[in-house]
Structures are given as C-alpha cells and as structure tokens.
Image (cartoon, rainbow, N blue to C red):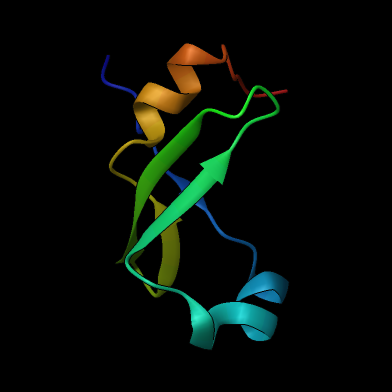
Length: 64
C-alpha cells in the first residue's frame, strides 16, 4: 500500500498568509535543522508535497 505523503495547509492560514506563499517553504526544527518543502495546489487546496515524506519519516510523525 502506497501512502500519500502530503499535508493540506488549513484554510484559515491560507486566508491570512496565502498571498505571501512561495512554491518552496522552509521548516526549522528546534535543533536548527532546516527543511525545504515544496507547496503544490492539489484539488483547490495547497499542500506540502516534495520533502514532506522525508520530514515525516525523520521525525516519526503519524496520524493521531
């Protein structure tokens, strides 16, 4: 089974900051590591895509 490694950005965030978003975004974790992720429009929503799978696996992020 192939997992879908993307995360939709909430609508409230997009209403407030959507005009300022680039196609590449950065996440900085507490140890200072910087992750570069690509944003993509998917079905009228903006999602983290490229780089998100590596981020999720590195930090053992799961549902729940």
